[in-house]
Image (cartoon, rainbow, N blue to C red; front, top):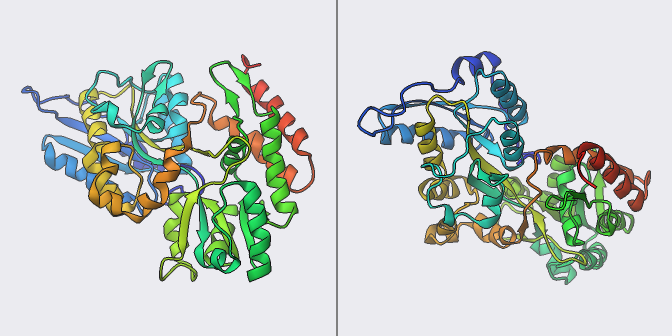
Length: 420
């Protein structure tokens, strides 16, 4: 997902227009064997893209009459590039690695092909419920789940042990534990991400709230749980239990954690490798990961991840569907877990003995099981920006939690015209 994991490579516009047009060649060779060209836009990060390119090449080996045109696209640019290409009916890929929040938006615009009843949806009942939820819009399926993720509580086992505290299960416990940690070690308890709205969601879910109720078409972020979520974040900072900044929480927070300056940070699987590179976690078994603490409403972190979507204007739909099926298969998911430590979306893959031994899976499976589906509506991405400004306003004292929740709610009602 977004959240500081975007690919760093820039794909030249000329290369995109030259290589990223949809296939348009024959779907099969006349005897039922798939054939032709499939263009694939891969939005994985720099560390992942080599593996995904090889996986695409392996599909070609399995199907000698298929040519996969692999194009690596910067995650930060991919959403708008796809909209421009699909909207202009020129240059859109046959298959795209799509962030979970994009599917409803693209489907609403008519840019994605429904996949129900097609080869793409192979063993549909094998997908995790939360992962499958992000693939559907208005009763139809427009993507297949490829990778799932969520947030967890990273913690420094040594610092918690020295302070004599257990891993906190609630934010109230975290606040108390932070005081003990600082007294015993001189370190702060938590680095709080205040610069990215995605990190607001565990506090909101922990209070039993949500941004909107999509079924009832009602804005809910300004209900009592929304204000309490802002208040919890503010209290953690004001009490000294947490440190924060609004400049670059991704890099600053990870650095503080891996250097041992804070004992805990809420983060995702994409930062496991970065944490282990720090002096606190290079050796031994000092890194712990647990579900994010909860509030009055329990525990809950947002579901993130990646899906595979097929362009509605593809000239080679059957082959594109088969490629999406392969890229989401148990075989490929097992491989990406082993090689990249990515989290599978298929329940059967989690049962594989080698996958079960994977440290990433051990860390994050409990958190994945508790992941909360976000409102899969076309405006999903747009819901974050109003939150960004109000998070900063609350943490810097420019707004009260109640005022902040109210302002976000007002912005949502302008954005969502038919919501109460």
